[in-house]
Image (tube, rainbow, N blue to C red; front, side, top):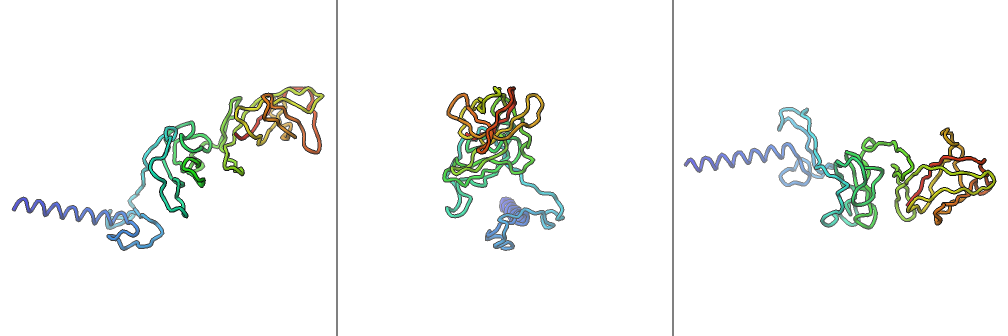
Length: 246
């Protein structure tokens, strides 16, 4: 009789727990919960007086932490319907713990920082997407440009897909008699996106135009001016910030 009573009590407690669970978390199209059939939200974990005695109890969702620099591959087959995203993990959200660097799979918008990141992937491959901060506060909008290559927070859309914009700072010397100057081509550079030239040591912008830039040569020969007018810089040393794609 005692065994029967214990089993009966266990069943009662499990049933009560299940009832409270469904009262607390409502899932669309769940046969045990007909209150939210066809609702736009697929899951509703709002606090309610039935489960908590009040509708004002705070509730939150905690995401598992992951270090995106060590996230080198997606496991399993891509989920979703072929004609409707998410496919190829487009829209996947993680809480990243890495404080710098880039993700180990796909490209990264800017530099990783702690916070929520999502995978934006409209490509035809699983690894063809870009990790982006879920909120602008997740990544520092300031980019410190130095004499070594720096990845900016800017992604450029090109005919062949999206590409990261890089930048680097340097100097060049003008002879005062030629429209050609030598600006070294950074390793891997394929296209010059923009350039800002400063008066040496002043920070004052001198020019933002170049007529041409030869990437193929190590010297990175550049012709100053525009298609309608060439410019000869006065003999001096100039600072520049080069923006480019790879």
